Length: 375
Image 1 (tube, rainbow, N blue to C red):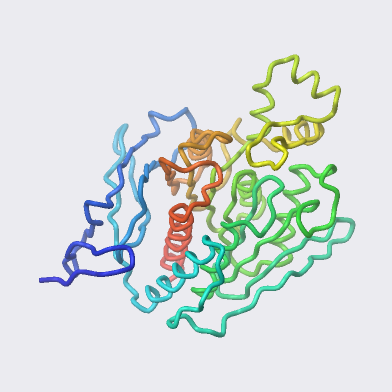
Image 2 (image 1 turned 30 degrees about the vertical axis):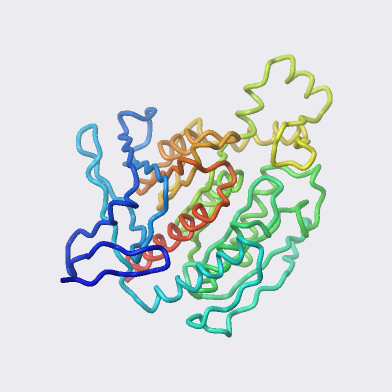
């Protein structure tokens, strides 16, 4: 009789060793919704799987890539849940989640005994660029593929997701970079003069001047928009994408939905005071010039020439960027390796512990996939 695997998250049902298909125990099996291309807007050729996840995977099982093939108008069966095979790496994961709990609770982390005490340190540095603002960044050296976190609109590199990914990369020894856009955080520059195009250049500067080897880009909100542009511009270096509440064309779409008289008023004033519960003063003051410049970087109007694996995570309670946006992105990209994972009770920021766990499991899954392809 196979033994049960006991972990901090619970106990799995017995799993037969060598079984070709291993599934997660019933009490944590997520509800699934499948969307075939025939039920999505026209265009593209990828098989898209949408997973609605009301609670996170647990036990010793790990998230395995959900694979599907087009069969007529439908989708083939979901790939199985596969237990982690390397117990040494599992121990690192257990240590990481202890650190994650401390991070989310705002407490200092005690180094787990099974994680090496001598870990790489990350300090603030600055990337000097001729005729462009210097960019503040933090970098961990490590193995490939490296991870680059691209923050959301005027968000800095010290957010919950950025720090959690750093702890994850430390635990597995992977290279990692987080940074501030020009005009944001510790970087030089005037925020009032920033544009989507300038921030796109910031991302490319990080990839070109700091990153070594293949990179997985993790983009949050507007960062998800910029990660797609980076993948288009640097296809040889960007090997996978993970979008969190991906806000492709988001500000432009929101602006165009305003009444005509309101848009004219904003054009005259030169500033759009966009209401937001995430701003301390209740609004974000966005320059009209920022919106007009952003129109030149919209992607959803035509096929998006990105061929690498893409994972799109989105909260169904997102009141800033509708989760349907991730479905549109999945349809528009030419890549056939696209998964859309919806969190039923998550909002735009997706910063709860279960959201962060899903994020790092997704990163690990892509690392595992890319390593398998290379080997």
